[in-house]
Length: 502
Ligand SMILES: Nc1ncnc2c1ncn2[C@@H]1O[C@H](COP(=O)(O)OP(=O)(O)OP(=O)(O)O)[C@@H](O)[C@H]1O
Ligand SMILES: [Mg+2]
Image (tube, rainbow, N blue to C red; front, side, top):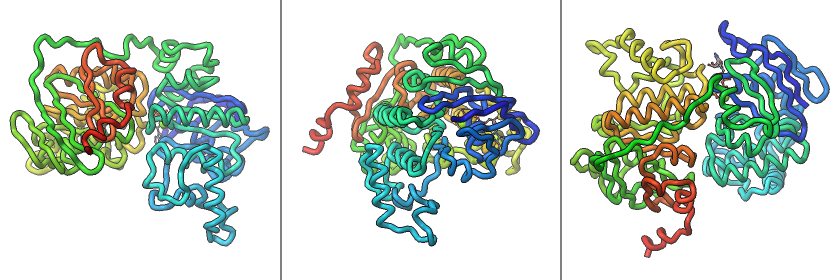
């Protein structure tokens, strides 16, 4: 179906793809893996005509191709679901699916009825229950992704490429996605699948190609490799342990932050929890259970409608981000693009964004001080970049995440809240981030980690608080922390909600 031969690409004199070859066959799912910045997304963009290669050949569907535009690749049957997919939240599902589709708008006008009807048929084919007339902005991220797939299927798709589709979904939603992908594979579609969650490769894929620093490492049948082997191909060394060794607490640690019966908006309905010095507390639960909103309420990013937060003995009925930062609380948001990073600024500016006091002298920015701090962060976190002055917009996703973590780990003195800290991060970098988290905890920070990855929760947490439907469903500690106990709390029938309502 697709054959890439010796693809080369450089940006500004830096070789990003150094001769990559890959074959994706009809009726097979081909995993593409590699560390952050290895070149996966770039290779996909070359395949889809978004980026022009400097060298190499693309054969697709029996012919030699040289895409002049993404539209040309699309019309031949290549469809990509990008790492950060672009949708129009204020348009309906149907409009998002058929936007720019010439078949339905011959005179530039969309035939609404035909469009709604076709959208309904496509969604039915996917087996998802989404009303094509609602606005995309009102859908969950998982449903938005289904809309993206429906969009792909609205064309004749021969090759479907997914760039980290499960970075934004988890658990059941991922399972549903896999069912659909297997179905498409069985219908003869060739699929290329990019993910940093290696379990998924073993569950879903037939073949796997590993690239490292833009170079091919090898292609294997998935059934021929195991996870440690794959990891060592990716990172070029055996990775001892992903998680740092467990720590013991001889005396119960002091409480740093207490949240008492706090509510905020519709998603946080009376939650209490405590964060302790040196402890890593995980906040687990299904997507939409209110975890992010609870964290935002603690940080003052969402208003406290009820309850209070006590920090180091002082009680607050109102919180603002400025007050939270002054109290020593740091928050790494899950949405790095919109809320976290200044994409057009460089690494140095982003690392020091929360600590401007340290890099200004008499009201002037001290570029040298900024660069020194950034150099340290780059070394500590193994951030792959050209140096402190590289714009973060040009960095790979995982390295952007490290920049943000570096910012907050420096800034937070008492509490560090991390919302999905390893989303989109490669295994090697994950191990780095876990190590940094434990070091921060050892320095006395109370850490609250929101995570949808159960192995990560089990591997890292000293305590687990599980949310369900805006309420705290339960708390687990020590040997009680395992995937099954967390899932049970996260999904049990809505009895707790009824009790509160009564
Ligand atoms: N437009 C660009 N200009 C300059 N450099 C770029 C550009 N796009 C990508 N790069 C660089 O190319 C390299 C490969 O990036 P790419 O996004 O393909 O990595 P990736 O394998 O998809 O990583 P991740 O797992 O983090 O998504 C990175 O070093 C990145 O900084
Ligand atoms: Mg990528």
